[in-house]
Image (cartoon, rainbow, N blue to C red; front, side, top):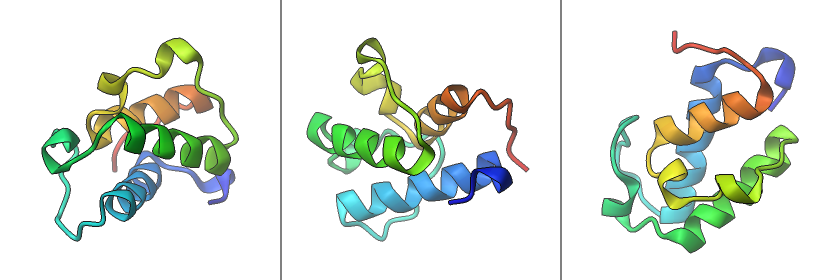
Length: 91
């Protein structure tokens, strides 16, 4: 994903795609849906963190690696935007 064309929507779409891949679901995911209800666990979350760090060239600090920081698509997207130093909004 080219970082020169990042929007909050493009980040969220990437996050949604990776969550669906990891959870092996085709279910439509809303921004504020609790992913634990679909089977998201700490192991899945750490796999996502690794994917996000690789894709966006960011590093999450140890104290950020709390399950609640990755509980919803919105939480994940907001955290990535924060790490990128981007004040992005949804279109």
